[in-house]
Image (cartoon, rainbow, N blue to C red; front, side):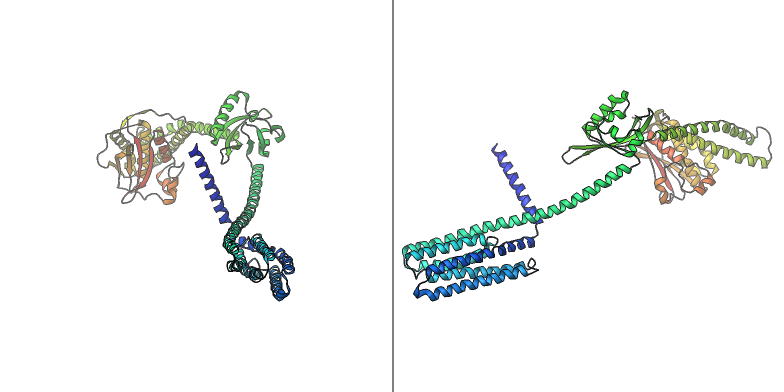
Length: 585
């Protein structure tokens, strides 16, 4: 317990020291000194009045026939000091730049304080030895009072008090020490002690004054900063309120219990309720009753984790009984102390969007199927004609039928690619994973695409020895990936060149790479390489064929088989496309 108490005390001292240091850093030293000088000069009128009253009383008590000239001389000195202090005070008050010249006004006040102390010290040196016991006691009491009265008068600057008190104490000490009386000599030894104690008190008071002035200026600055922060917060609050009010999406403010506190106009339009009808109600009112248990579970999990949710699709009932599908983003607002301030829910109606996507997919699928059936028959018929099954065909007719066959096949490839993309994105494409030897896969792909390479006068060949390792994947879809990569390499390689296929180890699997000798990938196109309908050079694509879907399909198929696909510049020119697959366990 003692160690705990000591630890707490040390922590408190450390915190206090940190606060003090912060205040010291934030307070302007020039402003603090200006406040000290202002405090000192504000005491001058009281000091002058006190000096006059005490001086008159002392003159009436000390005057005697043989000392009347000294009393008058001393009174004149005292009056001169008072007049100089009055002029000093008037000059300070009339100086428009006094807060900029604080050092100079402090020096002048120090000189004036020393002069006042020296005048009282003169009285001690002259009048104490010249009077009997009663007046000596009076004079000693008077000097002690004048010296003590200087503490509150000059406490805002302890060096000034030290000079003032020294001018009184030193002559009085000397007189007592040389008077020839043992008691007075002993008192003379106590006067420096009394002086030191008085200076120490003035020093502590000076520290209190300085700390107070620093605190005041620091807090004034903090108040200014707080006011500025308040204005900024109010401006931000107005902006946020305006943003929420004018936002085209529904915005709800909820508490930890799911009670609605605020909602914007878009939310009123979405649900068909006025804000006054829903504010104060539970958000469960916007969820169909049969989904309330799910709502309670998900809300409890949200309050537990305080993690924002995005893309949450909920079927919400409207006031008119129609259900709308909304996509919600739910964000808990938590302060620095981990306290929940509010929950902001932002939602938009995606019913029309989902319906449009469904219709688009149905249209695409139906159109593709309806086109593919007659197109297959047309291509088959053209192939029979071109193969000479129906007899000899004139050369001019053969050229036309070959063009028709190529374009029909191109159209069929496009339809198949569109169907594959739609299946992948809708989640309807299923894979049949099995162990596949890479060398067999590569050789099969080269054989199947040999005719395509011959068409563009490009040869396919392995680079080095092909790996016999096995990977896990769908055989048909891997051949599709290889076909897309090989066909692209053949189309964009110069005639007579060789497209190389290599296999090599990769991180956690095996890499298959296709190296072409084409013109390379433009820098501006690299970020869109695997996007849908992306083609680097549309002119080349029109000349050599291509849908812009092949690489997009490759990327999705490889990722579905837990692999990665990419490309890089080939040494010596051209591009290398690669894909990594995990080894078969």
